[in-house]
View 1 (spheres, one colour):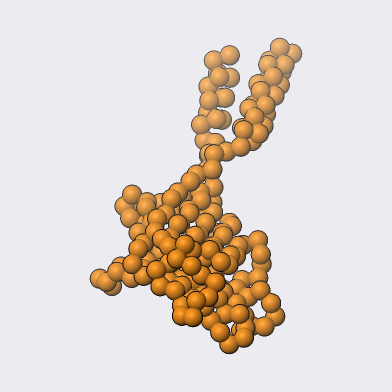
View 2 (spheres, helix red, strand yellow; view 1 turned 45 degrees about the vertical axis):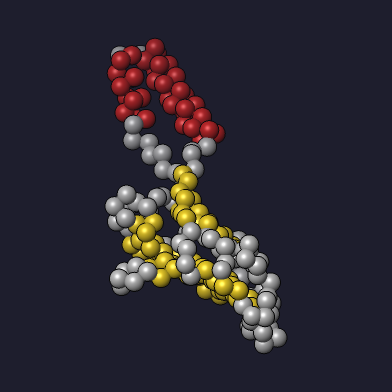
Length: 193
């Protein structure tokens, strides 16, 4: 009887999915092309992107996604899913046979006041589907006074890293304590029979 209970416990544990949220982080190379006259950007600024998804993209993936959360910065301005003031954003990815990001487009356009001419556009884009290679990290600020400042990097591709969040110990202990309670209840029932 005890062996049956252990087998039942093992059967209950095996199908438990341990799906962890996956975060993809892009670190661009420093800007090489600054606007003239100089704006707020320097050659030390670069585009960074962080996109959290329910699960990894997987091998051979190709589509636009809606992240659980995201953050994007060009070193001067930044925006995130928490801000709620984005006018437009897009997150598209293509992965290779190993599940590594090989092509992407990330674009965010947002304003920080009611003047629609004042805003920032941040993009990271890499596309080689048409036989040519295009890489563009862009930061552009429009203060609303008719001026615009921008910075670009057209030559380097930056890097993507992938991080899977591990399940919380508290969640695992809840599952464990629930299973222990089930076993205890089953033992009590079998002793009363």
